[in-house]
Image (cartoon, rainbow, N blue to C red; front, side, top):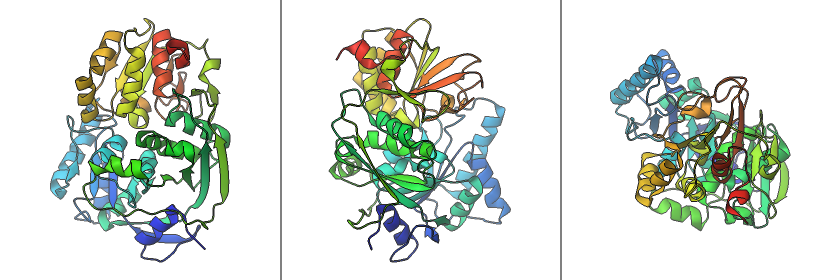
Length: 422
């Protein structure tokens, strides 16, 4: 009996020839990461267990990106604790303000996560890296402390489900629309503790950045991880980024899946997730009477260069609606510099948007874009739960960068075809 790509990675990292769903294993870790919310807790647990040194100073990454640049004294203290720990341990992958990006954009960009890796992080969207053919998953800070100390974790091998995408998506359809369509179909618990394996012609035509967006939101369907097979696009993307050799795994033809689903996305329209769940999905074209107060473009989900290009292409020569605050969050300093080089920074500023330093800030209602009671935000982020971006009486709508930019222009949730034609 064959194994899935997820099972093969877990088998290789636990020193076994094979693993099966439901088994408990101890697995070797290639990278352990935490941010400025979760790292302080992990550091405290690390010290409480009597650990003195991390298992490998090159394989622990600390990324202060949530409340940084520090929004208040408490945030500054958390960042200081991370900084001191990184210096004490000689960590090679500590990223300070000015060099720091949003963690799930920064680490792939830096070549720190690669095919065949097992990556754990004290952040639920660690599943992002499955787009590169890695097994990556989020966990609590105490488990992360153990991983930092020992270089291994215990896991239950998840069941795998196969999701196949057919058809040729239209010009404004991106990875965000595909994953919203998926979550809308299966629900926020439709992949609970499963590995979501994404395949099919529509996936083959999707950019690596689009795949990273899809893998990022696998957790919004309850998944343990999301994962893609490595193809020529992946290899080309990694060619200028990978810092070390990597191992590619592919699912066997006779691998077993607990469920197989097929989606025809050829006629898919740009989508929006309504409050207060990522599964509450409707076409943007049906929501033209929903006014918004704020538009957020960026985050670990859609802070990639291609997302900035999409948004800039719609905003060029246009202005943000006078009743809307439009805030742009590129994923890393490198992406921001490239935006400047290509002239997109001028496009955003001329339109009346503000461009921030890379930070998770508004996504979790942390800072630099918190919404008030009664306000609505249309955001390219990944969650729209009650109170997610600020006041519990605010509302968050999720969409891709094309819908977000079009909405910023009109002041109401807008299908980009209305603004751009076609």
